[in-house]
Amino acid sequence: MFRIQSKITPSFLESVLLTLSIISIMGVFIIKFDAVPHMPVLLAILLLITYGLFKKVPYKQLEDGLVEGSKAGLGAIFIFFFIGILISSWMIGGTIPTLIYLGFQFISPHFFYAIVFIITCIIGLSIGSSLTTVATVGVAFIGMAGAMDISLAITAGAIVSGAFFGDKMSPLSDTTNLASAIVHVDLFEHIKNMGWTTIPAFFISLVVYCILSPSKDLQNLEEISVFQEGLLQTGMIHWYTLLPLVLLIVLSIKKVPAVLSLALTSITAIIVSYFHLHLTVGEILNILFSGYTSQTGIEVIDSLLSRGGMNSMMFTIGLVLLALSMGGLLFTLGIVQSLLMKVESLLKSVGSVISAAAFTAIGVNTLIGEQYLSILLTGDAFQAQFQKVGLANKNLARVMEDAGTVVNPLVPWSVCGIFITNVLAVSTIDYLPFAFFCLLCPILTIIFGLTGKTLTYIKENSLQD
Picture: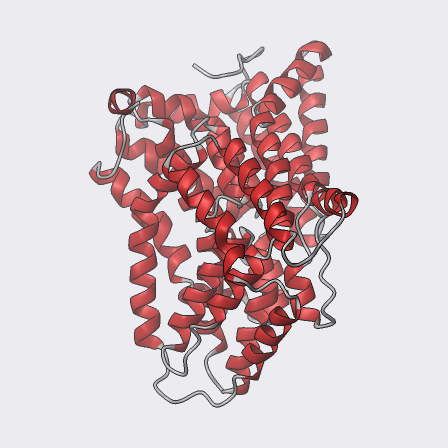
C-alpha cells in the first residue's frame, strides 16, 4: 500500500503522540528560536530513531528507511542543480533583467494594486523566487504606497499574491519542481495542470485589485525610475536577451524533459551573454556555480540580480534530503500508515481524498510553518490514496501547490510569513485578507475535488500518453 513497508505497527495513540512531538519540536525551534528548519528536522529524525530502537527495530532497517526516503528526492535534486545554473545564466544573458525592465514599463497612475499584482507576477515568473520578489520589487512598491498614502495592507497583499503566483507557476521555482518530482509528474505537465485552479484565481484576484485600486493620480514614481535606470546601467537590456525565454516556451510546448529544457536554455543564455558582457570561460563557470553578482552600485538592483548558481540550491537540497529522510522513517516505523488507516474508511471518494490532502498541506503549514515539508509530507502520504480512487498523480501535485506552496505566507509564524512581515513591515494578519490569490487557490482545489471537475484519472491519463 505504501512505497516503504513498515517494520512495526504502532498504536494510533503512539502515532499521534509522536506526530505531536515532531510538530512541537518544529514549531518551537522555527517560531520561538527563529531557527532554520534543517535543525529541528534533524532533531525529529533523532527522536524517530530513538523510538525505533526502543521498539527493537534494528538500526540497519532504520538507516534503510532514511536512505529509501531520501531517494524520492534525487530527481528533484538533479533538477535543482540545473535551476541554479539556469538562473545565473539568465542573469548574465540579460533575460531576467530585461523581463523585469519590461515589467516596469506597464506601471500606471491608475489601477495601482492591479499593476503591482501583474508586475510581481511577471517578475516572480521570471525569477522563480517569491521571497526575492518580495524583498526587492515588493519593497519598492511598499515605499511608493507609503509615500502616496495608499493602503499598505492591500499593497502587501497584491505583492504576496503576485510573488507566489510566480513561485507556483514558474519552471524555475524550487517548490514547483519539488512537487512534480515527488509524485513523478513531468514539470511542464504539472504547470499546465495547475492552470485549472491558477488561472481563475489570477483573474478573480486581478478584478478585485482593479476594484480596490485608488482612482487618484499617483505623483511619486521615483522608485520605478531608480529601478529602470539601474537596470539600464547593467548594459543587459536588449531584445535578443529574450531568446532563451522563447526557447523555453517552445521546448515546454514540445514537452521536452525538464532537465534537457533547462540545459538547452542555459546554453542559449550563455551564448547570448557574449554580445554584451564578453566573459571568459573561467568567469562563466564560476558564475554558474556561485551565482551572478551585480555591481551597479544601486542596492536594490544588486540585491535583485545577484543570485543563482548551483551553490544557491544547497539550502533547499539539504532540507529536501532531511525532510524526505524523516518521511522515510515515518513510513518505516508505520506512523503515517497508522494515522491514515484510522481515517481510511472516510477516504473512499475522490472529493474526500482531495480534501484530506489539501487540509493536510494546510495543516503542516499552519502547525509547522514550513513550505517544503507541507509539499513533501503531503505528497508522500497521499500517493497511494490518490491511486486507490483512480486519480492521476498530477492531481496530487496540483493540490500540494494549491494548499501548500501558496498557503505558507498566510501563516504569521511560518518561514515565509515571518520573512515577509520583516521585509515589508506589514503584519501577516494585516495583509492576509488581501492576498486574494493565495486564499483562492486552496478553495478552488477543494471545490474542483468535490465536484470532480478538471480532474485527470489514471485510465484517462494512460490513453492520453
